[in-house]
Length: 396
Image 1: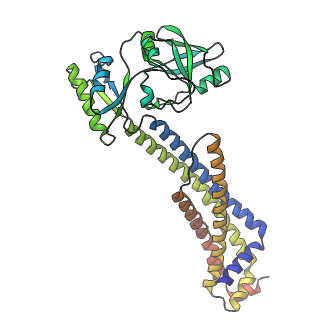
Image 2 (image 1 turned 180 degrees about the vertical axis):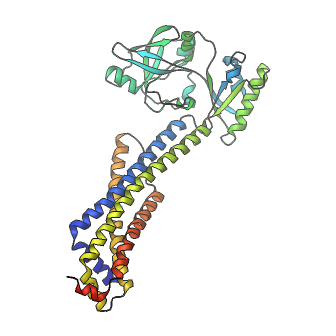
Image 3 (image 1 turned 90 degrees about the horizontal axis):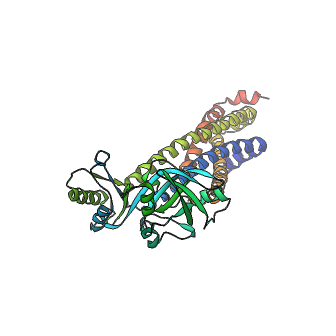
């Protein structure tokens, strides 16, 4: 068996250039699959981290569309929610798409009116300045938090504490002092919306109520004590609110954990599809193994005839060529995995994302690569094993 391995490796290394090019083709195929999979993993991880900002137990309470004229959602309702035994914390939320601007920059943004308690429910990472304080809410101060992306676009730097921005609120434009810079992508309230918005601005909800000429809220974000019975807890809160105003279906709860599961499942499916598309490149690369093996059979016809003449069986010839195909696949796979994960780690670190080694994926792609190499190496191996010794010895 050792002699068989030696013979296979010797045959490959006699044609180093061609062997290296074939290995390179396989490694590029594996590399593409790895990079695509890692991009999907990082994307799913980023979305999961964002949705984690409201916790697995998070829900939102809002008024049913058909009951907006009859069911209020204000301070009394917030107090009712806070009195429910299932609730740890609740915070009011107002939201509006509007225009924000500085002297040199204009942008469309989502402006969120929040309370000081929002920080206990929503993960808002303030990197410069401070979060809202009770005095800001009580005095209805014209202060705001902006994300670092907006700060860089507006002033060319992240720290713009003390600067003033204009926010369109209803029919009026207000001037707001920037008191905090939020890390982009951490305090996203995208759990409440279904699409990405480039700029987020946070203001005290009382200030935003005055600007919009309103007294109520759009939603109430709730953190629950029981993470295992989110639906039941949400139903209990809704029941308390409906009972308070004497209606039956005035309010609805939105299970953010369920949204998270649906979104991450969808992203996993997209990643799987993209990985399958990348797998096609690996199959195409494996075709080069068949090509090089067929050329090798043609070039080594006389050698095969000699081996058969001295007693080599068809099985031995078949095994030798399959070993060559397996060796090319294995080396190409290892090279592709190494380079692919190296590139992916560098990219993930550059964008501040976390990437972990998925050993199930590594095992799967290794097995797939080896199987592809063996499958495409079977025909040349069979062709070599079936050569007639007499005809093979006549080959020049």
